[in-house]
Image (spheres, helix red, strand yellow):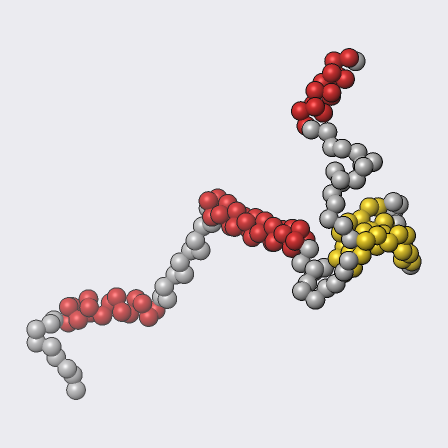
Length: 148
């Protein structure tokens, strides 16, 4: 049994079905990969540098704020320290109303001196060297340089 299409001739039917046959016999070619331009590479590098800078900034801020050492329940506060050797330090520690000067070395810690806590700054101490204002220091430096 044959189906006849009175309005379409045999050639018209073949012309209509040809694109469908072409698709079945030959699969479509894969589209080429998008080209990566220099603009997108620069954008990726800039984004990476921005993320790295943010990580460094947060680490610096945490270190600067001394978050790990100071908590709400800590009664011990490290006020400062000075290196006196490769592995030796002198550290000023505050415990409640007392300041302790401690010598710290490899494998040993020794209390060097105990002081009552005071709110005095270096300017209130009689024998402390007074800081030189910058303009006086610069004038002294220029005079010293001109003399040589």
